[in-house]
Length: 120
Image 1 (cartoon, rainbow, N blue to C red):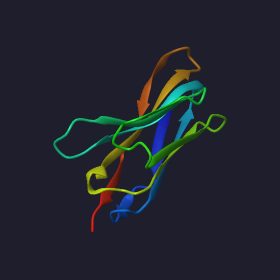
Image 2 (image 1 turned 90 degrees about the horizontal axis):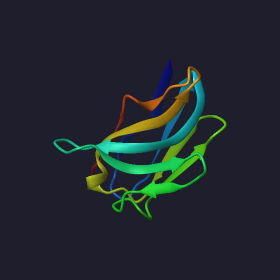
Image 3 (image 1 turned 45 degrees about the horizontal axis):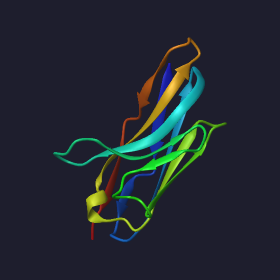
């Protein structure tokens, strides 16, 4: 079994910063990609940023230059530094991990989500 747990959400004013953290644990042989998605009310879940185990990153156009993803492969953790936050960044942020399990299977695992609210 694999668990993915996020932390670090909260309330911040426009222009402020927040840092989200995520850790994958359990019966893990390796993690291919880790990343973040978000879902705002009445909207579909969308990609925010991902990082492969080789360090390749992908960002949504809306967050480029403001958000930075980082990862510790040895610890199976991923962080998202969010700067210059905007009202439209308000959403539930979900961490995911593309995991090879020790039993040989591979699938995505998702965290429970953490709320980020940008408001004045």
